[in-house]
Image (cartoon, rainbow, N blue to C red; front, top):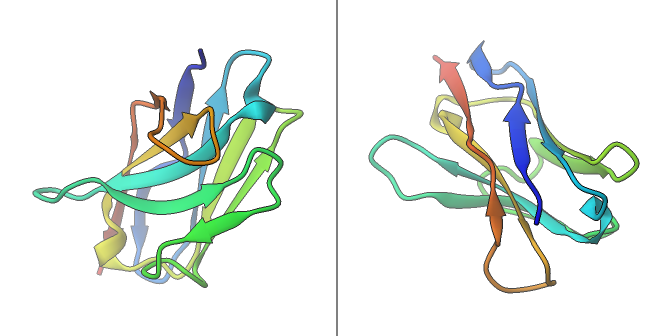
Length: 119
């Protein structure tokens, strides 16, 4: 089992940048496949980006491709989401998630961090 804690959210103007972090406890962080999701007010939670356990494989939603960059530091048990060229439509609560396998449902979720982009 792993506990996930997001940080780094905040208020930023359109065109600005934020860097989210997802810190995990436990000794097996490097074995988890990780992802970021977001949920805007009145909308369903949506996939943002995925990273493999070793960090070599990433998959981005079309809406963030070229603007967001996911990374992970397994030595620090931490995953990051660098968000550049932010748009008002990126406003949402961002969640990190972990799963045991390459595919399937995510088993563990963080509590979320709010990102607000003003126009």
